[in-house]
Image (cartoon, rainbow, N blue to C red; front, side, top):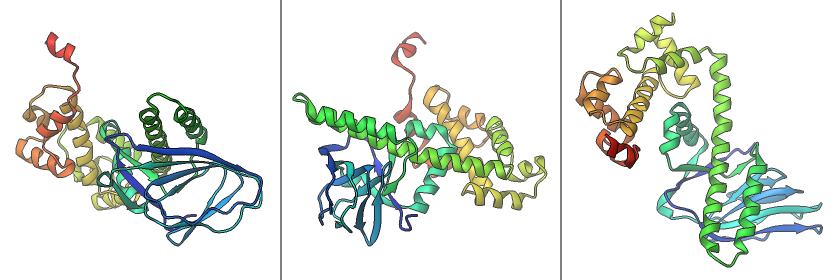
Length: 305
C-alpha cells in the first residue's frame, strides 16, 4: 500500500507535449539512475521488478503497474533488478498553470462529485494521474503505448500525433482510476441501503422537497440519514440534494433554450435569484456563463427552429 499516494491533477484543455518514448528490456542487473528532470515520466511495468525512491517513498514497478516520476523531483533506483526486466517509459511536458498535485483525500472528494454527477464527466477536462497504480485493464494502456511507439518513429506529423496518443493514454489511466473508485462506492451504497434514496432523488429532481421530507418518506431520522450520506458518499444529504438539482439544471442549460427562470422552476426552485446564487456557488459560474460554454444543440437544428 502506498502511504503517501497523491495524484497529478491536469486540466487537459490541450494535448500533453510529447518528448520521447521507449522500452527498457534487459536480462542483466539494472539500477535506475538518480535524476531530476524538467519533464514528467510515466513508467508501465511489463516484466520483473524495478525499485525506485521518490519523495522518500519507495515504489516497486511490477508487471501491470504504472509509476509517475514527477517533474523537478529527484528519483533514484533503490537496488539492482535480480531478474529479466522490461518496462515502457515516456517523457512528456505539461503547462504548469494547468497542473496541481492533490492528496488522496482531495481527489477522492472530487471523484465523489464526478461519479454522482454523470454529466460532469462529459463536460470536465480534468484528469487524474496517480503516482502509483495497478490499472485493472492494463492492456488498454499497452495498446495505446505501442501505438505511441509506432507513431513516434514516423516522418510526418510525428510530434502532434504522438501528443494526442499520449493524451489518450493518460485519459484512459484517469478513467480507470475513477471507475475503480466508482465500483467501490457503489458497493458501499448497496451495503447501507442508500441506493433507493439516491434513485428517488434523481427521479424527483424537479420537485421541491426538504431533507426532512426525504428522511420522513424513507422512515429515517433526518440527522441520522444526513450522517449516513456524509459517511458513505462524502457529503451531507443537503449537499447531495443540491448536487442532484444542479446536475439536472446543467443538462437543461446545455441542451435546451429554456429561460433561466423556467429551468429554476423545472428543478423545484421557485426563487430564480436563489437558484442563480446556488448555481454559482456550486459551479463557479452563472447559469448563463455555463450555457455559453456548453450549449450543444447543433447548427442544423437551430436553423430548422
